Amino acid sequence: MDKSALKKSALRTIELELSAVASLPERIDDSFFSACELILNCQGRIIVMGMGKSGHIANKIAATLASTGTPAHFVHPAEASHGDIGMVTAQDIVIAISNSGTTAEIETILPVLKRKGVPLISLTGNPGSLLAREASANLDASVEQEACPLGLAPTTSTTAALVMGDALAMALLEARGFTAEDFAFSHPGGNLGRRLLLKVSDIMHTGNDIPRVSEDTSVRDSLLEISAKKLGMTTISNSQGEICGVFTDGDLRRFLDGSQDIKDTCIKDVMTNTFKSISGNSLASEAAKIMQDNEIYTLLVIDDKESFHGIVTMHDLLKANVV
Image (cartoon, rainbow, N blue to C red; front, side, top):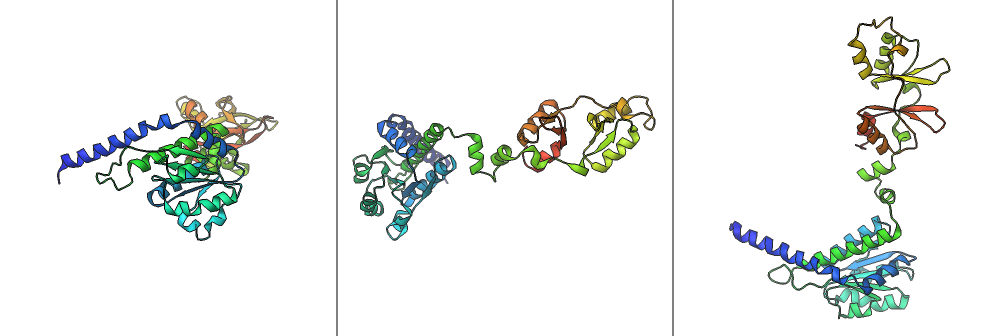
């Protein structure tokens, strides 16, 4: 195995693909703007097609569009000519990807698309091809040469097509005002979805799970409540039933450094009467930030009317994969 030859080949591939991508900015022209306008005004879906390696690129572009605010899906052009063209309606737009611009399977369905009145956007490496000429807008992803030394395997051309597709998707995303929360709705199972969709109320402790003692309770009995509820703290209520303070593991350590008696000391004398809180409607990620910024491990959940509803802990956030 000749390592220097392998390295030379790899570097040549990277340099050729970098060069191809570097030439794309000059192709963001009126045709690109027309493609964006067509898609933004589309009342249906974006159907992305491609054969072979271009098909893999088409599939990825369709997935990117769909997850960033532009309803889209992939249709295999060979299957389209055997019935799947029925998936395409007059309200849709077709993006056809072909480096040569002469892919037979795509050319076969062009008359059907015309008869249905379906606008066509082509993404080709040959702006003079039939596919480019028949399109309402052509995205030029032409390259000088493939990275394949035989000039056969799609390499540089598929990279350029993918980047042009990403450029289109991101331009549409920004034009639609697509937000991170919108993105989360398309990715409810991912980390981003959990961070942007999960609310404090979804994971907080409520009811009998909340540790509570009155302000006249001894420190010893308060510790029993802390141990029983296993949240590393307890809330303290006054005679009106309102939360007037908290007592945490940190407060206990400070208490033990003193000389007071655990049985005779009332919790109100050693509690913390200022505490951080958050609304149940707030995102769980906001709770994580408050805890991290203040180096604390619990937050009281209080609504806009200052009513106490529950407790959320850092452990809850970790279990929910928010942090």
